[in-house]
Image (cartoon, rainbow, N blue to C red; front, side, top):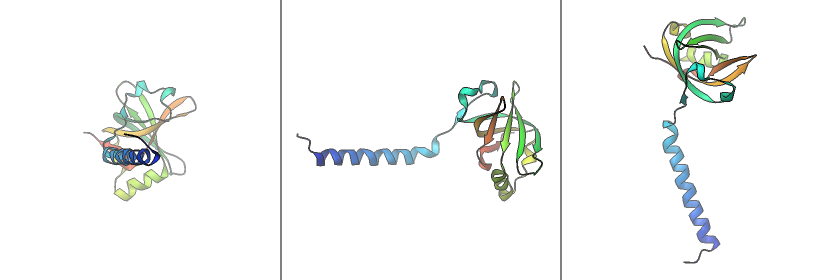
Length: 132
């Protein structure tokens, strides 16, 4: 069998379609890496991870547009930032963010650094789930 440009194009097209369909099928089942707070380091900056712990405290910025909470997994603590757009999502869902205080949660966020401390930025309102 001799390969010419037309056959190569058709094979590449079929393989591309199969790859795109595979991505669409499996995209909903991809979960972020679960990690313990004490494992978070500068090497993880920019990664989206899942972390489990108890929310110890809430604090709002002076403008009230940003919420800072502390997540404790029993070994370590980390600050979690919830920006105004995500707070608005909670409001639209009718969820009082402060009702999560002192409860075990699983959250998904991206790791960032502020000053010399590692922080998580909550991805969206659906990224915070009550576990108990």
